[in-house]
Length: 70
View 1: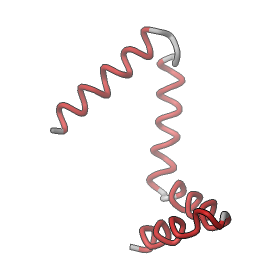
View 2: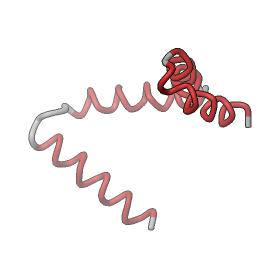
View 3: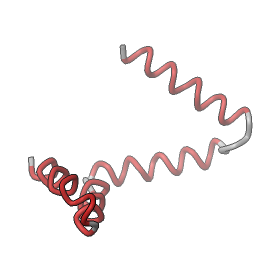
């Protein structure tokens, strides 16, 4: 299963680079930054804060905050 997903991801990335929509160096830098944020759970904390501010998404914010504390 993971091998199939990995191959799909690689083919998508190769297509983007071939079409020159996203240069390789930019994607490397961007994805490295995203992994850095995810390791520290900063993405989840910021998402929770933004969801709690809007009344329509408050329930999702509570659910996300439960995910953070687990």
